[in-house]
Amino acid sequence: MLRSIALCVLLLILSSCISSSGTHTSNVIPNQTITSETLAPYISDEGKTNIALLTPFENNKNHLGSSIIKASEIAISNAGNPDVNLLLLNSHLINQDPDLLLQQLKTNNIKAIVGPVFSKETQNLIELIKETAIPVLTLSNDSSIKGDSLLIMGSSPGSQASALINYAIGKSINHFYIALPSNKYGKVIEEAVAEETNKKTNITYSVTWYNPKDPSYTIDSLVKSISNKINDNNALFVPQGGNVLNILNTALVKYKLKINLIGSKSWDDNEILDLPLFNGAILVLKNDQKEQIFFSEYNQLFHEDANNIDFIAYNSIKFLAEMIKENQPLNKENIISFSPDQFDQDGVSIHKMRIVEINQKTFKPVE
Image (cartoon, rainbow, N blue to C red; front, side, top):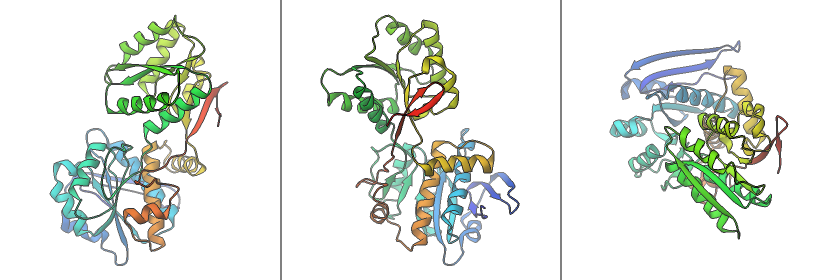
């Protein structure tokens, strides 16, 4: 049963809890300005350790922020540690009012930060707090960000791509047609593919870049161009899901293209099982039991589906709460040594991946 958590928010208070009867209640008070003085009563409990959660609440990201908060509630409850206070701060402060953010972190004696979600905010935060040595467990998956106190909690798309390409090569694929967005995400994927293919001889790939805001024409053209020149040793790798996946399916049907398909964790959607041309596709799914249990628990409590960032937030907060429960100091070196199977030596989180194949409307593990 989730216990009540004091969540203090700048510009927005959003508190959610599970009552003793198991009913989910929510109270949202928008456009409420909170000063440092009014914050103090929420987090001044003696003997408790304060953690800050930086999450977005503006620019149509409200749902992401609220789901991360819900995930944090489950984390604190499952960790069984009542001696943790979670200070919730709007991550837009990193860029819009960094002085106020730094004041809040210092005034409230924050021992660790979970978040933010996005790479640029993470880089700016690291620069802002470099003199404080507060460990930052960012929800970003951008391992190119560097910082003495930074730990990367997100699952890198590059590591997913490497695992999938390496598996496909082992299944005799020798050429990869790849459709990627022309942004940083796409570049990370291409670098991972290049690294894996360069390890082998006679393995090639070609990349088609598309506008992330309008991928329809480019993906349609790519499918059309390869529809008459493929063989059993070719594969089409399209890592993005959502609308891109719908566009891809439309093009495959239009040109009657049957090809070895490679996806990613973004394809983790049961609706894909009903698409005939995706039978035989390989992708990455949730791996360990802990992850699967979280998604099930979240759905049961809130009657909606969590996303991967929610799980990363849950895992980060629960991990810190467990360290606090065992009276472990919160610094980067000790966080890494506390769970050496979760981080590499640079503080990048290690995510075990489960490669599956779509087989007769089921996700069938292949390794």
